[in-house]
Length: 67
Image 1 (tube, rainbow, N blue to C red):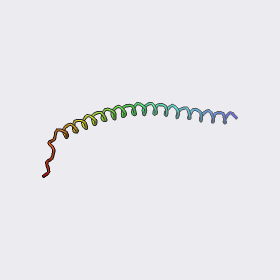
Image 2 (tube, rainbow, N blue to C red):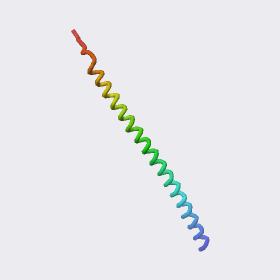
Image 3 (cartoon, helix red, strand yellow):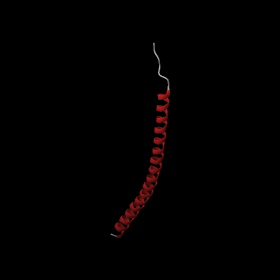
Image 4 (cartoon, rainbow, N blue to C red):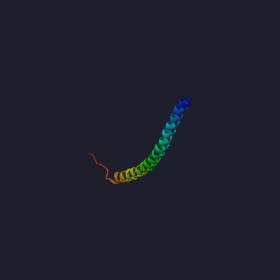
């Protein structure tokens, strides 16, 4: 009986260690995700600004005169 309790206790401790490792990893991954989302939003804004500049330049091009 004591042996079984010791075994169960060891399994519980191992499970708790895994849970703690997963919590740490999850926290790290959440921070990483936030960083990547911030960078993505910044790049989307830059892309939109570049698109707007290109559209303005295209509008300023002389019209093609085909005869």
